[in-house]
Image 1 (cartoon, helix red, strand yellow):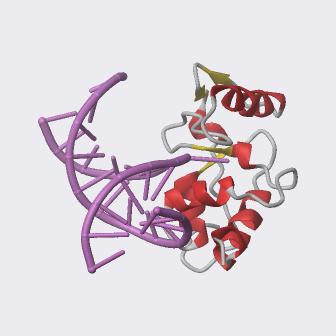
Image 2 (cartoon, rainbow, N blue to C red; image 1 turned 60 degrees about the horizontal axis):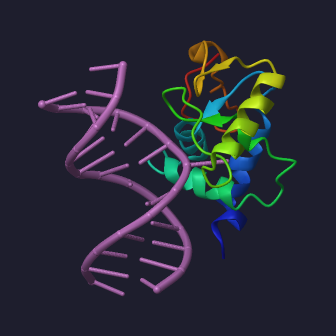
Length: 119
DNA sequence: AGCGCGGCTTTTC
DNA sequence: CGAAAAGCCGCGC
């Protein structure tokens, strides 16, 4: 069973779907929200095998330091596409980095209420 | 089992 | 601030 069909992947997709336009999240944040804090790279693998590509906004996933990260194989053209998508949603990107990253960073995943001290 | 590789992260220098 | 080095998790060889 491929990773993209696993329960983890489904959760990741669900979590990612809760990220509103104009906001971004990170691989690590998704991993954390999905219950596997150390498996950030897995998220990338999940994205790569993304079955519902148009449905899942994998372009809203960036690296923890605000840099864009990869997209469909790290090809430069794909990255540019990702950036364009983000920009069209209102996320300012400059020199491969998300501007005001801490502001647009979205981590309020509600799918994991248990260990979060929010609200 | 062993090794290497990712759309990564964190620490250390 | 940039580069290097572990760690981490699944997959493929």
